[in-house]
Length: 488
Image 1 (cartoon, rainbow, N blue to C red):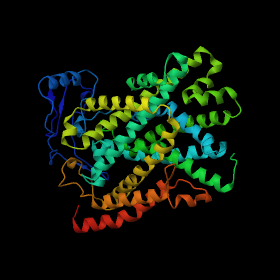
Image 2 (cartoon, rainbow, N blue to C red):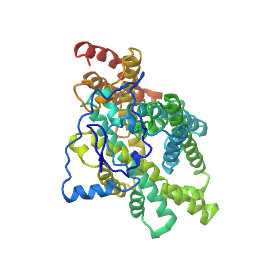
Image 3 (cartoon, rainbow, N blue to C red):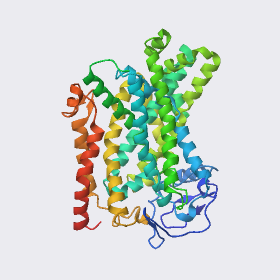
Image 4 (cartoon, rainbow, N blue to C red):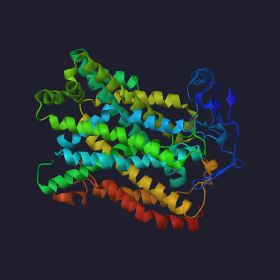
């Protein structure tokens, strides 16, 4: 066993994948995003909670070749890997594999079937809603190579040490919810392929273990707002993962190419798969076999769409269901990191143990909620926009207005030093104001905001947009006051 070469290091096995291809030279990096200097050592890691037999067992697991043992400990410049131009292709292919999943097909179904929108309206909402929300993941992704910090650790530089834990809690719930949805869809699909021989509940367990519009103009307008908000929220939650997978890229990585590789990798597959779902939904009213299958489950509908291919169609559906692993695994990875961010004892528990616990929760919840997939989609997805939108607004304003324009770099070595991180009072108040905007603008089955009910005279969801507006108006003056009084 070897220790990392800084005081905040954790025990990293020689066979760990993160140690392969380390840069030989360590350099100081200073740019518009931040500074990196070894003059300020990182804070020591949390005390070890695993002792005796459990510690030896953990060492064996983390010593397996090809596994990453590191948790939220910052990656220093000399520990990074330089993959050249191939690294940008890896960024694109990473998100491409994450987004080519059945979940996005089911989301596309909601436009025609739930919001009663036609083909043109749905496609426009899909294209532009996904394109806009993909920017959050791409933007935060540019911080990964520069800082060497995970996304939720980066949140401390914008929200403060303690308020940032609120976002970590929301991210845990969001990623686990997505894992539950992916498991339910995969379970439905396995059950449909196997006929009566495999229940949806068993299918959920298997998947988790594998890890023109018609109607009054006002109604159409409201439904357009709601479906666009849903599509906007679809990818917004991935912003909380943006930097997690890029911490091993060198500090010289191009921010522009990182943004473009990530944005295109997130947007293109999601947009295409969602449009496929819209197309399937428009065919359900005129195709009895599809209509009957949809009455059973979304998985049965996907199988019916491949019916003309016979046995090969069933094979394709199984592959599509197994694609949920690629979608669930990054979410579990991020949720485990967020659990470590919550405190020193959370950090002391190895990440792989948190992932195992998350898997158990997803199994139990997916089995319990397997009959309520559409309701989960309708109620959960917009909530993602409510908590991420004000957070992203604070990040953009803090970065551009208070760092880039003022030419003040971030001190990435302060990742766990409360005395050098922002207090976060301004960010917390602005974030709560953003939630106030979301509450008056949300339009859900269980609550209709006073502003939302005015949309189109029928009611539409504009909670995310009001959250952005309320946060954007309140954060700059509050932050300037905070800097004047407190100084950080």
